[in-house]
Amino acid sequence: MMDAETIGEGGAHLVISTKDGYVLRINKKKNNRRQVLQACAYERQVAVRCLGREFVLVSQAVRLPREYGSKWAQRQKDARSLNSALEIKPKASDRVRSWLIAPEHAQIKSNFSRLQIVRAAKGCLGQYALHEKLWSKSKEEALSALICMSEECGHLWKWYSKDSNTQPSAEAIAVVALALEREPLLSRLQAIQRRYDFLDVDGVTELLKMWPRLRKGPPCCGPKQSRRLEHIANVCRAEPAHFEAASAEERDQRRNTALRNLRLLTKQEAAEALRRWLIALAFDDVSIIVAFRKLPCNDNEPPRQQSEDSTGICHIPDLASTFEYSISVTDCGPKPYSKLAEKSEKEFGLCHRASVVLLSSSQSSSFDHR
Image (cartoon, rainbow, N blue to C red):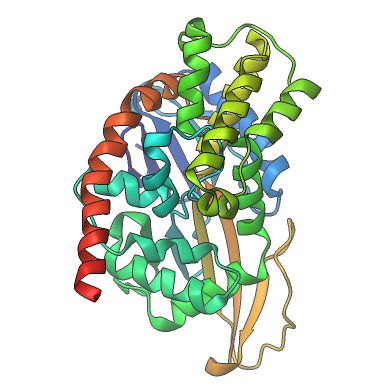
């Protein structure tokens, strides 16, 4: 029997750690060699190209022993190899990215993060607004976001320690904040989310109305590069600050212009636009693992950024300590095509439920403040 322990389980995947320093990711629903090979290829062709080889642990396809039903799995090195590690879910970096957002959703989407909307629709409030600070250029704001996550948002972080500590210390959170500030990972992740998500779920809904057959799956082939698609993407894409500051009239004008351009897409170009949105959706849902260990006092290694061949080194003067760290991205595999119709069909109800909770709560807070 394979010597392993379960370290995570979601609706679709089971994640186990083996004693030889690897992690196995097993799809509980669909599991065959072809699908696992496709997921591994996606990591190499998309995740590595977008985020960098130094941050992405590329998986290999392996067949599991009989006690696991002879299933296939993705195997990668265990990112928690150093003394301690904090796994976080950064989620979407922006509230809005598209002019295609429906007028009835504009207020809720421009005032609250996607994380806040989804959690509120499920009846959970909490301090999710602070989670957005993780994307701040300020180490202090990122630090406050990490502290909030460790105290309020248990499902967005997971702590691992060989010292049997059940909670990350203030020192540990400071190391993670500094490591994220020093490395370009979050800025790359934000850039790729913005590049590929020019539709929003509301734009996905519009494209599926125009091309109903795309609900069942993409055409066999289509151009991945199209000047017309790039132009239309630029018309649809909204700078978050511009959308939030725009009047209702400007939003309507820009949305109508975006819809007119969207109707110019061929079926193959529409399928490519939807494929890109799925890529953005995958990058909205990655996990980041920051592993680290304190170096001995007599270790005089100079600070350095992480590379493909070496870990990073950072020094924290307030603690008079030097740390070795490693940042890795996991859960960056492809999202199934079925997510398009699933997200589209649920969006109206989700936004409505979230609006009832968040807008009434916001108005109540403003009244109490006055």
